[in-house]
Image (cartoon, rainbow, N blue to C red):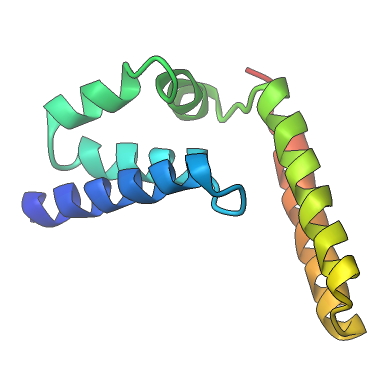
Length: 117
């Protein structure tokens, strides 16, 4: 079972790294997921991820306090607004826009209701 957790962790890290390049794929949630999988499979990989200078602080903030940094909240807000504006520019059907707006508003409520790190 540890091998399966490790493979899932490596896939999550890969998806998170893709998210660094592609703005529509979130990086931090995949790194949080990877930390979850690595905690169940490999102490070494878990320690590497938690101590990583770029990803580690966000993971530790989330694990210890359920916190999201103010900078990350601002970036997430800008990304969400950009995605919705893109949907408007593309002229998506009103029903799709309504569903997207409701979903994105709920995501924003969740993000901004978390404590700052």
